Length: 427
Image (cartoon, rainbow, N blue to C red; front, top):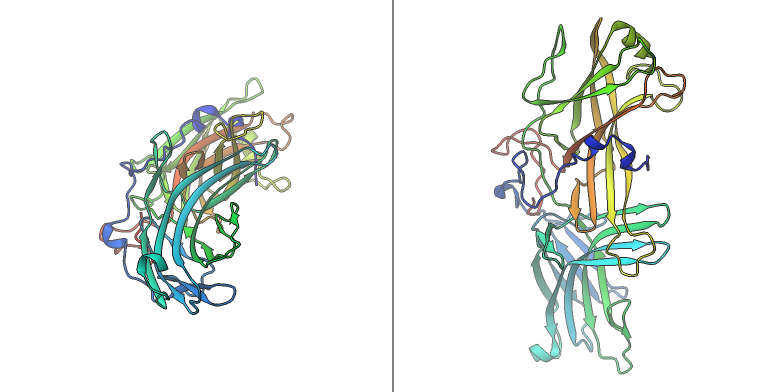
Protein backbone atom coordinates (compact mmCIF):
# COMPACT_ATOMS: atom_id res chain seq x y z
CA UNK A 1 0.00 0.00 0.00
CA UNK A 2 1.12 3.47 -0.78
CA UNK A 3 0.93 6.18 1.84
CA UNK A 4 2.22 8.90 -0.45
CA UNK A 5 0.23 12.11 -0.04
CA UNK A 6 -1.61 13.59 -2.99
CA UNK A 7 0.26 16.91 -3.24
CA UNK A 8 3.18 15.00 -4.82
CA UNK A 9 0.96 14.20 -7.79
CA UNK A 10 0.16 16.54 -10.68
CA UNK A 11 -1.93 19.29 -9.08
CA UNK A 12 -4.29 20.12 -12.00
CA UNK A 13 -5.54 16.55 -12.19
CA UNK A 14 -5.95 15.95 -8.49
CA UNK A 15 -7.91 19.16 -8.04
CA UNK A 16 -10.62 17.72 -10.26
CA UNK A 17 -11.77 15.20 -7.67
CA UNK A 18 -15.53 14.64 -7.94
CA UNK A 19 -17.90 16.37 -5.56
CA UNK A 20 -19.99 14.33 -3.14
CA UNK A 21 -23.52 15.67 -2.86
CA UNK A 22 -26.71 14.50 -1.17
CA UNK A 23 -28.68 14.35 -4.42
CA UNK A 24 -27.46 12.38 -7.48
CA UNK A 25 -25.77 14.39 -10.23
CA UNK A 26 -26.84 14.19 -13.87
CA UNK A 27 -24.50 11.25 -14.50
CA UNK A 28 -25.65 9.28 -11.42
CA UNK A 29 -28.84 7.56 -10.36
CA UNK A 30 -30.45 6.43 -7.12
CA UNK A 31 -31.96 2.95 -6.95
CA UNK A 32 -35.61 2.97 -7.89
CA UNK A 33 -38.16 2.97 -5.07
CA UNK A 34 -39.53 -0.35 -6.28
CA UNK A 35 -36.09 -1.88 -5.69
CA UNK A 36 -35.68 -0.47 -2.20
CA UNK A 37 -37.73 -3.10 -0.45
CA UNK A 38 -37.71 -6.13 -2.78
CA UNK A 39 -38.56 -8.62 -0.04
CA UNK A 40 -37.67 -9.45 3.52
CA UNK A 41 -35.48 -12.51 4.13
CA UNK A 42 -36.88 -14.85 6.75
CA UNK A 43 -33.69 -14.94 8.82
CA UNK A 44 -32.90 -12.95 11.94
CA UNK A 45 -29.84 -11.81 13.86
CA UNK A 46 -30.00 -12.95 17.49
CA UNK A 47 -27.95 -11.91 20.50
CA UNK A 48 -28.68 -12.63 24.16
CA UNK A 49 -27.55 -11.25 27.50
CA UNK A 50 -24.71 -12.95 29.38
CA UNK A 51 -27.07 -14.82 31.72
CA UNK A 52 -29.52 -15.63 28.90
CA UNK A 53 -32.39 -13.74 30.57
CA UNK A 54 -33.00 -11.43 27.61
CA UNK A 55 -32.73 -11.84 23.85
CA UNK A 56 -32.40 -9.22 21.10
CA UNK A 57 -33.70 -10.39 17.74
CA UNK A 58 -33.30 -8.23 14.59
CA UNK A 59 -35.46 -9.17 11.63
CA UNK A 60 -34.47 -9.41 8.00
CA UNK A 61 -30.87 -10.56 8.49
CA UNK A 62 -28.92 -13.55 7.23
CA UNK A 63 -28.74 -16.04 10.04
CA UNK A 64 -25.06 -16.81 9.40
CA UNK A 65 -23.96 -13.15 9.28
CA UNK A 66 -21.59 -11.94 11.99
CA UNK A 67 -23.24 -8.50 12.14
CA UNK A 68 -26.56 -7.01 11.02
CA UNK A 69 -26.46 -5.00 7.77
CA UNK A 70 -28.74 -2.09 6.80
CA UNK A 71 -28.95 0.26 3.84
CA UNK A 72 -30.25 3.75 3.15
CA UNK A 73 -33.57 4.39 4.87
CA UNK A 74 -33.75 0.81 6.14
CA UNK A 75 -36.09 -0.07 8.99
CA UNK A 76 -34.32 -1.50 12.02
CA UNK A 77 -37.03 -3.70 13.48
CA UNK A 78 -37.03 -6.61 15.85
CA UNK A 79 -38.14 -7.82 19.23
CA UNK A 80 -36.79 -8.02 22.78
CA UNK A 81 -37.66 -11.31 24.42
CA UNK A 82 -37.93 -11.26 28.22
CA UNK A 83 -37.23 -14.71 29.65
CA UNK A 84 -36.92 -13.54 33.26
CA UNK A 85 -38.62 -10.39 34.48
CA UNK A 86 -37.92 -10.22 38.22
CA UNK A 87 -37.48 -6.65 39.57
CA UNK A 88 -37.31 -5.00 36.12
CA UNK A 89 -38.34 -1.34 36.10
CA UNK A 90 -37.64 -0.25 32.53
CA UNK A 91 -36.69 -1.69 29.12
CA UNK A 92 -35.55 0.52 26.25
CA UNK A 93 -33.83 0.24 22.88
CA UNK A 94 -31.15 2.71 21.79
CA UNK A 95 -30.11 2.96 18.11
CA UNK A 96 -27.25 5.34 17.36
CA UNK A 97 -24.51 6.33 14.96
CA UNK A 98 -21.49 8.55 15.42
CA UNK A 99 -18.33 9.76 13.70
CA UNK A 100 -15.20 9.89 15.85
CA UNK A 101 -11.90 11.55 14.92
CA UNK A 102 -9.08 11.13 17.41
CA UNK A 103 -5.48 12.30 17.50
CA UNK A 104 -3.34 9.42 18.75
CA UNK A 105 -0.44 11.40 20.23
CA UNK A 106 -1.85 14.64 21.67
CA UNK A 107 -5.30 13.36 22.59
CA UNK A 108 -7.35 15.81 20.50
CA UNK A 109 -10.70 14.41 19.52
CA UNK A 110 -14.01 15.18 17.87
CA UNK A 111 -17.27 13.22 18.08
CA UNK A 112 -20.22 13.94 15.81
CA UNK A 113 -23.53 12.31 16.66
CA UNK A 114 -25.05 11.15 13.41
CA UNK A 115 -28.33 10.21 15.08
CA UNK A 116 -29.67 8.86 18.37
CA UNK A 117 -33.04 7.17 18.85
CA UNK A 118 -34.18 5.95 22.27
CA UNK A 119 -37.38 3.88 22.36
CA UNK A 120 -38.92 3.00 25.72
CA UNK A 121 -40.51 -0.42 25.24
CA UNK A 122 -41.86 -0.81 28.76
CA UNK A 123 -41.64 0.87 32.16
CA UNK A 124 -43.30 -0.17 35.40
CA UNK A 125 -44.19 3.44 36.19
CA UNK A 126 -45.86 4.23 32.87
CA UNK A 127 -47.56 0.88 32.22
CA UNK A 128 -48.61 0.21 35.79
CA UNK A 129 -47.72 -3.46 35.56
CA UNK A 130 -45.56 -5.54 37.83
CA UNK A 131 -44.10 -7.60 34.98
CA UNK A 132 -43.29 -6.68 31.36
CA UNK A 133 -44.65 -8.71 28.44
CA UNK A 134 -42.51 -11.63 27.30
CA UNK A 135 -42.11 -10.08 23.86
CA UNK A 136 -41.55 -6.37 23.10
CA UNK A 137 -41.40 -5.39 19.40
CA UNK A 138 -39.77 -2.19 18.10
CA UNK A 139 -39.17 -0.45 14.78
CA UNK A 140 -37.07 2.54 13.65
CA UNK A 141 -36.30 3.90 10.18
CA UNK A 142 -32.70 5.03 9.75
CA UNK A 143 -32.30 8.67 8.67
CA UNK A 144 -30.80 9.28 5.25
CA UNK A 145 -28.75 12.30 6.35
CA UNK A 146 -27.40 14.16 9.35
CA UNK A 147 -26.78 17.84 10.08
CA UNK A 148 -23.81 19.35 11.90
CA UNK A 149 -23.81 22.46 14.08
CA UNK A 150 -23.36 24.93 11.23
CA UNK A 151 -26.50 23.57 9.55
CA UNK A 152 -24.73 21.72 6.75
CA UNK A 153 -26.30 18.37 5.85
CA UNK A 154 -24.48 15.23 4.70
CA UNK A 155 -25.71 11.81 3.61
CA UNK A 156 -25.37 9.24 6.38
CA UNK A 157 -21.88 7.72 5.83
CA UNK A 158 -21.23 3.97 5.62
CA UNK A 159 -19.52 2.06 8.41
CA UNK A 160 -15.85 2.86 7.92
CA UNK A 161 -12.56 3.13 9.77
CA UNK A 162 -9.14 4.47 8.84
CA UNK A 163 -5.85 4.99 10.67
CA UNK A 164 -3.40 7.68 9.56
CA UNK A 165 0.13 7.00 10.74
CA UNK A 166 2.77 9.66 11.22
CA UNK A 167 3.05 12.55 13.66
CA UNK A 168 0.52 13.21 14.85
CA UNK A 169 -1.38 10.05 13.97
CA UNK A 170 -5.16 10.00 13.66
CA UNK A 171 -7.98 7.51 13.58
CA UNK A 172 -11.42 8.16 12.10
CA UNK A 173 -14.39 5.84 12.47
CA UNK A 174 -18.07 5.82 11.64
CA UNK A 175 -19.89 3.30 13.83
CA UNK A 176 -23.50 2.23 14.36
CA UNK A 177 -25.10 0.09 17.05
CA UNK A 178 -28.35 -1.24 18.53
CA UNK A 179 -28.56 -1.62 22.31
CA UNK A 180 -31.17 -2.98 24.69
CA UNK A 181 -31.00 -1.56 28.24
CA UNK A 182 -32.84 -3.39 31.02
CA UNK A 183 -32.96 -1.35 34.24
CA UNK A 184 -33.31 -2.93 37.66
CA UNK A 185 -33.61 -1.20 41.02
CA UNK A 186 -30.30 -0.94 42.84
CA UNK A 187 -30.06 0.85 46.20
CA UNK A 188 -26.35 1.40 45.62
CA UNK A 189 -26.64 2.48 42.01
CA UNK A 190 -23.55 4.17 40.61
CA UNK A 191 -23.58 6.22 37.43
CA UNK A 192 -21.07 5.12 34.80
CA UNK A 193 -20.15 7.89 32.36
CA UNK A 194 -18.08 5.55 30.22
CA UNK A 195 -21.03 3.21 29.59
CA UNK A 196 -23.76 5.86 29.66
CA UNK A 197 -25.89 3.83 32.06
CA UNK A 198 -26.28 2.89 35.73
CA UNK A 199 -24.13 0.11 37.12
CA UNK A 200 -26.37 -2.93 37.53
CA UNK A 201 -28.21 -2.32 34.26
CA UNK A 202 -28.24 -5.28 31.88
CA UNK A 203 -27.22 -4.32 28.35
CA UNK A 204 -27.25 -6.17 25.04
CA UNK A 205 -25.34 -4.27 22.38
CA UNK A 206 -24.47 -5.16 18.81
CA UNK A 207 -22.77 -2.97 16.21
CA UNK A 208 -24.22 -3.08 12.73
CA UNK A 209 -22.84 -2.33 9.29
CA UNK A 210 -24.47 0.53 7.44
CA UNK A 211 -24.09 0.00 3.69
CA UNK A 212 -25.86 2.59 1.50
CA UNK A 213 -26.20 1.36 -2.07
CA UNK A 214 -25.81 3.09 -5.43
CA UNK A 215 -25.30 2.02 -9.03
CA UNK A 216 -23.83 3.53 -12.23
CA UNK A 217 -26.21 5.43 -14.52
CA UNK A 218 -25.16 3.49 -17.63
CA UNK A 219 -23.43 0.30 -18.69
CA UNK A 220 -19.72 0.20 -19.46
CA UNK A 221 -19.30 1.32 -23.10
CA UNK A 222 -17.88 -0.83 -25.91
CA UNK A 223 -14.08 -0.65 -26.29
CA UNK A 224 -12.51 1.86 -28.65
CA UNK A 225 -11.19 0.89 -32.06
CA UNK A 226 -8.02 2.14 -33.73
CA UNK A 227 -7.37 3.69 -37.13
CA UNK A 228 -4.23 5.09 -38.76
CA UNK A 229 -3.96 7.81 -36.06
CA UNK A 230 -4.57 5.66 -32.98
CA UNK A 231 -7.75 5.23 -30.97
CA UNK A 232 -10.97 6.65 -32.44
CA UNK A 233 -12.66 8.67 -29.68
CA UNK A 234 -16.43 8.24 -29.18
CA UNK A 235 -18.84 10.28 -26.99
CA UNK A 236 -18.93 7.44 -24.45
CA UNK A 237 -15.24 7.92 -23.65
CA UNK A 238 -13.25 10.89 -22.32
CA UNK A 239 -9.66 11.68 -23.29
CA UNK A 240 -7.02 12.87 -20.78
CA UNK A 241 -3.77 14.07 -22.33
CA UNK A 242 -0.37 14.63 -20.78
CA UNK A 243 3.31 14.76 -21.75
CA UNK A 244 6.31 12.64 -20.84
CA UNK A 245 9.11 15.15 -21.15
CA UNK A 246 12.46 14.23 -22.66
CA UNK A 247 15.76 14.99 -20.92
CA UNK A 248 17.92 14.64 -24.02
CA UNK A 249 18.22 17.23 -26.79
CA UNK A 250 16.94 15.84 -30.05
CA UNK A 251 14.74 13.26 -28.33
CA UNK A 252 11.14 14.38 -28.73
CA UNK A 253 8.64 14.40 -25.87
CA UNK A 254 6.01 11.65 -25.78
CA UNK A 255 2.35 12.66 -25.76
CA UNK A 256 0.14 10.35 -23.69
CA UNK A 257 -3.58 9.82 -24.18
CA UNK A 258 -5.55 8.07 -21.45
CA UNK A 259 -9.14 7.12 -22.32
CA UNK A 260 -11.70 6.48 -19.56
CA UNK A 261 -15.50 5.88 -19.86
CA UNK A 262 -17.15 9.31 -19.72
CA UNK A 263 -19.43 8.71 -16.74
CA UNK A 264 -16.42 7.81 -14.55
CA UNK A 265 -18.84 5.86 -12.35
CA UNK A 266 -18.23 2.14 -11.87
CA UNK A 267 -19.48 -0.66 -9.66
CA UNK A 268 -17.08 -2.14 -7.13
CA UNK A 269 -17.64 -5.45 -8.89
CA UNK A 270 -16.94 -4.08 -12.37
CA UNK A 271 -13.75 -4.60 -14.32
CA UNK A 272 -12.92 -0.99 -15.18
CA UNK A 273 -11.69 -0.59 -18.77
CA UNK A 274 -9.27 2.02 -20.08
CA UNK A 275 -7.13 2.70 -23.14
CA UNK A 276 -3.69 4.27 -23.30
CA UNK A 277 -1.73 5.46 -26.31
CA UNK A 278 1.71 7.04 -26.71
CA UNK A 279 2.48 9.42 -29.59
CA UNK A 280 5.92 10.68 -30.68
CA UNK A 281 8.71 9.97 -33.13
CA UNK A 282 9.78 6.40 -33.77
CA UNK A 283 13.10 7.15 -32.03
CA UNK A 284 11.42 8.38 -28.84
CA UNK A 285 9.00 5.47 -28.79
CA UNK A 286 11.81 2.97 -29.33
CA UNK A 287 13.75 4.58 -26.46
CA UNK A 288 10.67 4.40 -24.23
CA UNK A 289 9.91 0.74 -24.96
CA UNK A 290 11.93 -0.65 -22.00
CA UNK A 291 9.59 1.41 -19.75
CA UNK A 292 6.35 0.64 -21.62
CA UNK A 293 3.32 -0.83 -19.81
CA UNK A 294 3.90 -4.27 -21.35
CA UNK A 295 7.65 -4.37 -20.73
CA UNK A 296 9.01 -6.75 -18.10
CA UNK A 297 9.07 -5.21 -14.65
CA UNK A 298 12.42 -4.57 -13.04
CA UNK A 299 12.03 -5.81 -9.49
CA UNK A 300 8.61 -5.84 -7.82
CA UNK A 301 7.29 -2.62 -9.36
CA UNK A 302 6.59 -1.76 -12.99
CA UNK A 303 7.98 1.59 -14.15
CA UNK A 304 4.68 2.33 -15.94
CA UNK A 305 1.44 1.62 -14.10
CA UNK A 306 -2.27 2.36 -14.18
CA UNK A 307 -3.78 1.92 -10.71
CA UNK A 308 -6.96 2.60 -8.80
CA UNK A 309 -6.21 4.67 -5.69
CA UNK A 310 -8.29 5.65 -2.66
CA UNK A 311 -7.67 8.83 -0.65
CA UNK A 312 -9.06 8.97 2.90
CA UNK A 313 -8.90 12.51 4.31
CA UNK A 314 -9.42 13.59 7.92
CA UNK A 315 -10.10 17.24 8.75
CA UNK A 316 -8.34 17.75 12.08
CA UNK A 317 -8.81 21.51 12.36
CA UNK A 318 -11.93 21.35 14.51
CA UNK A 319 -10.77 18.89 17.16
CA UNK A 320 -11.31 19.52 20.84
CA UNK A 321 -7.99 19.86 22.70
CA UNK A 322 -5.99 19.75 19.44
CA UNK A 323 -2.24 19.37 19.28
CA UNK A 324 0.09 21.86 17.64
CA UNK A 325 -0.61 20.68 14.10
CA UNK A 326 -4.02 21.79 12.85
CA UNK A 327 -4.57 20.77 9.26
CA UNK A 328 -5.99 18.10 6.96
CA UNK A 329 -4.27 14.74 6.92
CA UNK A 330 -4.76 11.94 4.42
CA UNK A 331 -3.64 8.49 3.38
CA UNK A 332 -3.59 7.12 -0.17
CA UNK A 333 -3.99 3.38 -0.73
CA UNK A 334 -3.88 1.30 -3.89
CA UNK A 335 -7.19 -0.57 -4.22
CA UNK A 336 -6.73 -1.95 -7.74
CA UNK A 337 -3.94 -2.75 -10.23
CA UNK A 338 -4.38 -2.39 -13.97
CA UNK A 339 -3.40 -5.12 -16.42
CA UNK A 340 -2.34 -3.82 -19.83
CA UNK A 341 -2.02 -5.47 -23.23
CA UNK A 342 -0.72 -4.17 -26.56
CA UNK A 343 -3.60 -3.25 -28.88
CA UNK A 344 -1.89 -1.88 -32.00
CA UNK A 345 1.13 0.13 -33.09
CA UNK A 346 2.48 2.29 -35.88
CA UNK A 347 5.72 4.24 -36.46
CA UNK A 348 4.42 7.27 -34.54
CA UNK A 349 2.16 5.70 -31.89
CA UNK A 350 1.59 2.68 -29.68
CA UNK A 351 -1.87 1.74 -28.36
CA UNK A 352 -2.67 -0.31 -25.26
CA UNK A 353 -5.90 -1.54 -23.71
CA UNK A 354 -6.25 -2.29 -20.02
CA UNK A 355 -8.54 -3.35 -17.20
CA UNK A 356 -8.61 -2.60 -13.49
CA UNK A 357 -10.21 -4.93 -11.00
CA UNK A 358 -11.15 -3.47 -7.60
CA UNK A 359 -9.57 -5.28 -4.65
CA UNK A 360 -11.99 -7.86 -3.16
CA UNK A 361 -11.81 -6.35 0.34
CA UNK A 362 -13.29 -3.03 -0.88
CA UNK A 363 -16.99 -3.01 0.02
CA UNK A 364 -17.96 0.68 0.26
CA UNK A 365 -18.06 3.55 -2.18
CA UNK A 366 -16.62 7.03 -1.68
CA UNK A 367 -18.37 9.51 0.59
CA UNK A 368 -18.01 12.79 2.46
CA UNK A 369 -19.24 13.25 6.02
CA UNK A 370 -18.19 16.37 7.94
CA UNK A 371 -14.51 15.81 8.88
CA UNK A 372 -14.04 12.55 6.93
CA UNK A 373 -14.03 11.96 3.19
CA UNK A 374 -13.12 9.06 0.90
CA UNK A 375 -12.39 9.68 -2.79
CA UNK A 376 -11.19 7.38 -5.59
CA UNK A 377 -9.15 8.06 -8.71
CA UNK A 378 -7.29 6.32 -11.51
CA UNK A 379 -3.57 7.07 -11.38
CA UNK A 380 -1.30 6.77 -14.42
CA UNK A 381 2.38 6.87 -13.45
CA UNK A 382 5.75 6.64 -15.13
CA UNK A 383 8.37 6.10 -12.44
CA UNK A 384 11.68 4.85 -13.93
CA UNK A 385 13.63 2.50 -11.63
CA UNK A 386 16.84 4.46 -12.38
CA UNK A 387 15.73 8.08 -12.92
CA UNK A 388 19.27 9.36 -13.47
CA UNK A 389 19.77 7.04 -16.43
CA UNK A 390 16.29 7.34 -17.93
CA UNK A 391 16.00 9.72 -20.91
CA UNK A 392 12.48 10.75 -19.80
CA UNK A 393 11.13 12.46 -16.69
CA UNK A 394 8.53 10.78 -14.51
CA UNK A 395 4.80 11.41 -14.87
CA UNK A 396 1.75 11.48 -12.60
CA UNK A 397 -1.76 11.84 -13.98
CA UNK A 398 -4.89 11.40 -11.84
CA UNK A 399 -8.44 10.96 -13.11
CA UNK A 400 -11.18 11.16 -10.45
CA UNK A 401 -13.86 8.49 -10.53
CA UNK A 402 -16.72 7.26 -8.34
CA UNK A 403 -17.40 3.71 -7.24
CA UNK A 404 -20.86 2.31 -6.52
CA UNK A 405 -21.95 -0.71 -4.53
CA UNK A 406 -24.16 -2.26 -7.22
CA UNK A 407 -23.72 -2.94 -10.91
CA UNK A 408 -25.63 -1.19 -13.66
CA UNK A 409 -29.11 -2.48 -14.51
CA UNK A 410 -31.59 -1.67 -17.26
CA UNK A 411 -34.25 0.95 -16.36
CA UNK A 412 -36.83 -1.77 -15.53
CA UNK A 413 -34.35 -3.55 -13.28
CA UNK A 414 -34.19 -6.64 -15.49
CA UNK A 415 -30.72 -6.10 -16.92
CA UNK A 416 -27.34 -7.46 -16.03
CA UNK A 417 -26.23 -6.34 -12.62
CA UNK A 418 -29.62 -6.19 -10.88
CA UNK A 419 -28.83 -6.03 -7.15
CA UNK A 420 -29.74 -9.08 -5.08
CA UNK A 421 -32.98 -8.94 -3.12
CA UNK A 422 -32.69 -8.00 0.55
CA UNK A 423 -34.74 -6.43 3.29
CA UNK A 424 -33.24 -2.95 3.11
CA UNK A 425 -34.60 0.16 1.49
CA UNK A 426 -31.56 1.57 -0.18
CA UNK A 427 -30.03 4.48 -2.00
